[in-house]
Length: 113
Image (cartoon, rainbow, N blue to C red; front, side):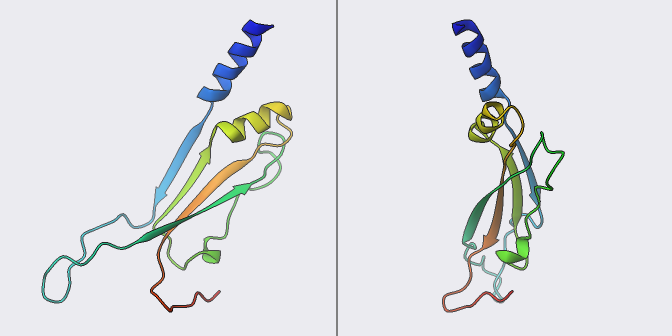
């Protein structure tokens, strides 16, 4: 029993993956005088999206316009917590953790949808 539990734990910890999509990678911006502009501040939003039956039911999609018009990066991670939830529900519930990274809005700016 202990050997099976150890094997299951090892599989759960090594079963994680991470996918990143860079919409526009960070580049050095210059001001009108040619000096380097201050680096942009980024905000990352995290959301767990459920899928079921090992991803066959549910899309795992997130509308990034909820957070910003032009995200810098979107990521899909299946971390240890997601894998353990999948194992404990026998792949009935298989969550994915999605991250959306945006430039921080300017002070006083409002986000419109």
